[in-house]
Image 1 (cartoon, helix red, strand yellow):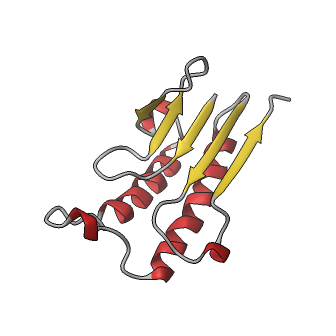
Image 2 (cartoon, helix red, strand yellow; image 1 turned 135 degrees about the vertical axis):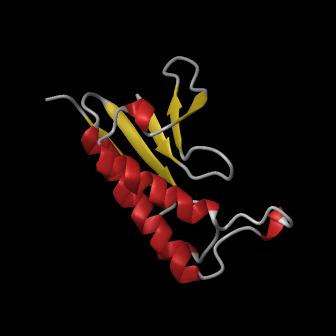
Image 3 (cartoon, helix red, strand yellow; image 1 turned 180 degrees about the horizontal axis):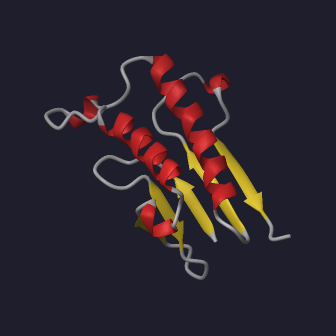
Length: 117
């Protein structure tokens, strides 16, 4: 199973990929059966991202400060690791950051693969 934590405006931040077609489906944290504390942390992370949306001028949406953007990414990496730890079995969890900042601030993606013991 492949799960991606990828905040997008006006939808859930989690995507699960069909194993045969590779087509992603937007899912809620509750659908994945995640613990309450992790659902809340994902919702908080997404709320921070959604707050950057400018409905009047969507092209102006985004974090206004590089520090806040990088902190958002760092929290996303941690959340992806916690998601991987919370779901038993074989899976890959990816975090895809959004926005732009200097390339040397953080890797583009972070992956965590777990195998059943």
